View 1 (tube, each protein chain N blue to C red):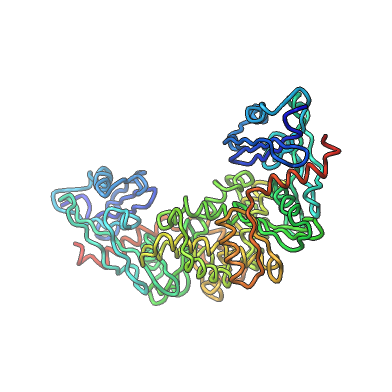
View 2 (view 1 turned 45 degrees about the vertical axis):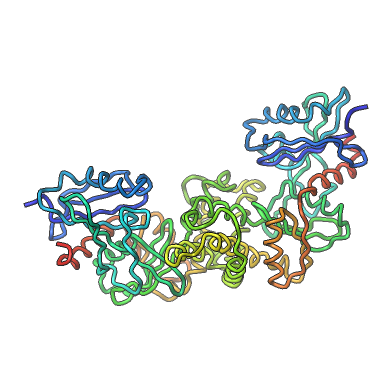
Length: 303
Length: 303
């Protein structure tokens, strides 16, 4: 008897989380550290970082470890090649990593790719989607997963049919913290009216975005635009342009917005202002649910 | 008799240049340093930095010094408030800075502002424009000054009628060097065909820009998009979206593109592909020409 039946791992750019799991999906223990991908300098760095977290859970028999996230990227522990959409996110063949410590058998969940209508990739979100679908197996419509790289995902019959990624979150971070706008934009807070107005501007005139962004600075200098209103304008302009570009995804669709609470609220507010039918869902627990769903559907292969 | 009749100064974010000038506009000497605005921590730092450059040119009598650029911003030596457009860029009342070293009389060229149709500001470019108009006084049409913050300027009867700024250059820098695209984009070189194709994509679908940007990464990962082609795509997507937004400025207009050679070529190539009538002009000498034009037109006030 080992302490756990298997181990779930979410390994992203900035974090590493692990759960000691029982076969029935219940959690016996969890642990996390800051040993995200960004701290790993070579493939050799991964195993010690993982073992330092999960060693207390290991026994003499090799335990299945199922991991998702950037750990499977080209710069990760071992590349788990992308699977082409359309695909069922809980049934992607996991990538087996050989040569690990004898107490673990490591599998990495692959990301999803598509070549048409536009080249795109996801890695990590496929597992959140699997978690969402394990909660809501009948869902048919569009998932919006806002974040650094926001994903719009068309789901039908339990499959990811197609998706597209917008760099909106990363642009917000770069512009608010490193561009000329950093002098004008508050570090937190959001002014709802300014957000709504800015959203409408780029939804109707997305081609003006680079000009409207600079106008935030000009309005601050000339007219004393308040920093919280400036932050809201920056957010509204970027999300408005994104909604203009993603319109084929959300217009007349059921949209479930899934992510961190603050971002979910912003995107849901924006979509509802355009008459979309929106449900909100928090992402906290979805990755673990997704890993469990993958483990269940693949238990025969893995165990 | 002093060594020079007046001193011209171009003081930007990253550089400080000064010229010892004769009344007839000829240059007796020039000097430059890296003491740009970015190195100045307080208003007290400016005078020593300037004197260390121009001291050899000074005599017992106070010499007029005419400066332009970020030195006149709120974070500069002394704020030279913006003048509202429409305005003639060689005839903006210079801002007199009191309390300087007795050997100089310092004047700072103000920037230009507008509140409609969109809040906007320029500081430094107004002097380049004055220089351009001293070469081409009959010019009627649109100036495009590509750079970190590209300016589109409507010129009529020697005046700046209106203008608009796009953050295109700063977005290119941030995205190519600090975003996820940094792994995919070459640090130099440009692939002309990839530039042209990307330009067309955002010119016709500017709302897709944040998605097309991420697709650069995906195409690199999935299909081995070459780094020089990726760099060209990034540039083409950003400039294409800018041209879509600036269309009222260039469509059916005479456009003079003024700036650094490489950028002028890119913008001119892009505009010509859309059938615009374009002339190219290098910016190297325009700031000094502009300061000279300002000095001539204001000699009575300044001397």
